[in-house]
Amino acid sequence: MILFKTGFLILDFFTIIILAVFFIGLTSQFSSLLAIALILILAGFFYETRKDWSKLNIKETEFRAYFSIEDFNNFIAVVFGGLATFALTQTLGFSAVLASGLIGVIAYMLVPKYEVPAFCGSFVGMASYSLLPGYRYLILAGLISGIVYVIGKYSFKGFGGKLGTTAFIGTVLAAVFTGQSFSGGYIPGGNMVYLLIIYSVIGAVLTYILHIRFKLSAVFSSGIIGVLAALILPIFHPANGATLAVMAYCATFAGMSSKDRISNEFIMAIGAILTALIFIFTSPYLNGAGGKLGTIAFASVITIKGLAILLNKIVYSGIFKEKYQLSESNQSS
Image 1 (cartoon, rainbow, N blue to C red):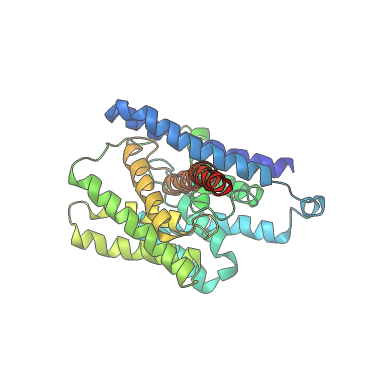
Image 2: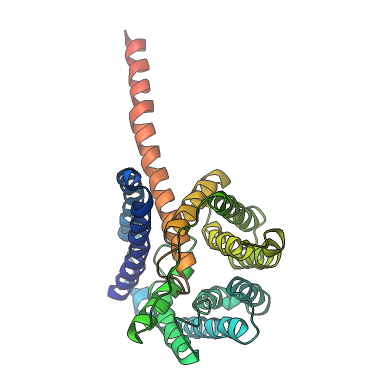
């Protein structure tokens, strides 16, 4: 039980880091909006994480069988997924989005039993060479991510972006342990903001439709959209297509959410807008870390789910309940 809760807390902590960085970026641009954004986002995020924490109650029999051959194989799949993706980017010159998406699609077709951990590992392999300059650094990140994947397997089930968050933990800790520095960046402006939001919504909703409506694997749905975005968007947008492909791919991770977490395309679109906003305002920070995109999506869908539940409680226990009581009193009179 302690291992399960540790996995939950680690995933939660690194997601909070992304949200904290988001608020730093937001403050630097729109300090007057910070208070409203902080209240809404933190309310949704912490409500949902508290609810998921209360559900983390694993039976003792499951705990004794925790370290199984299946867990070991998943652990290895994470490591190899990272190495394969890193090889595609560093040896063959593929973009990180194209390499990761291909690994997801290939894993789905060749080893569907391990497509999920392999896809998780692909996000480790998306780390930049400047942050993890070589395979030994990548292996360290993969090992850490593999451990988190195993101990966090009962946490936040059904939320898209969890795999990326798992990879983010590994790459960040590997970089810190080896004394590497994260690269900087800038907050996009002008028309680029609108394009990022548009392609975020497209990426998330298309992935959600493929996964939920057409019953395709979440890994394949995200991977194929990522591959298409990496190949097509640079053609339609020569100046910034690569960045837009990264945004679309980031949003596909939100689209991997299960129906019981994100119930329809409209809510997914709202989650995609939040994903784009977090992507935009975290652009100057923690760049080069594999899994950052997934963590952004993870924070977004958890927040949107929590806000949806809170809004539902307010509406049905407040307005509707009040109207129901008024109608009852009118009938009795």
